[in-house]
Image (cartoon, rainbow, N blue to C red; front, side):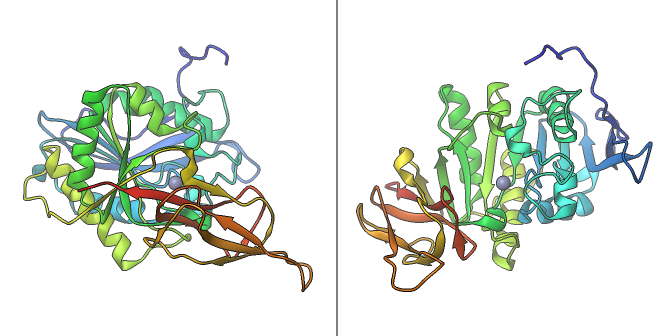
Length: 336
Ligand code: ZN
């Protein structure tokens, strides 16, 4: 990596991060292209500040085809008045705004996956420039960071709020307190397939209290999952001292992803037959799905088996799979 730490970001905000009151504006990123020589990407942002207090950075649309976060954040930014807040709220409903407009996981401009682009680069691609702005300008302002995700077009999840197991046990404890306050139907001790380049990792390495969600998927939202996002967001802001009110307590089931055996990947392409739906239990060795070769009849199907006991926490959403696709994610239920 080249040393670009001192190079200024090309992004200019139209809002003042230190001004009192509610502001609605943009992070303006110059983007010269065929249809607009001196054009820009205009990433919506709201700042709601009232006096001293903690600063929360809340984001959705890190992946452009995940909708519960943007719904909860657009609704909050629309309805919140400065006098409702103690401290500062920074709301970015769609981090990867070009991807959000296209309804795709990654950016149509550079194919950039925002959550694999950190720490970003001020002289990189559009996605890398946005990541760099979060890394050097927004994350340092925040005490707590909430980044909404869902499964997108290719995964579907049990609705959960999550934090990571961290080397800093005090930070880990504070993060899980917010997960509990969020009050999703499930709460997850989350493990990543590959944590390099993630916004999560950038925030945690900066010592920020970081929580995230997976609230459904399939490239849409439901009344239930949008409601979970809105209620959980309010609960977290009350718990963090930014909003007044009572936390709406909900029963949550704690889940753990104890090791890499929780992930099951397809070893061949074909038609997926699920034998298990989200939340259902399996034992190690059970068949969780079958994959039928597409091209002809009379050929053996592939059996996909659980490598541990657990419940189905996530599944491949489209009906067809390719070799290497994540077919299932299992999690263990923590004793309550
Ligand atoms: Zn995501």
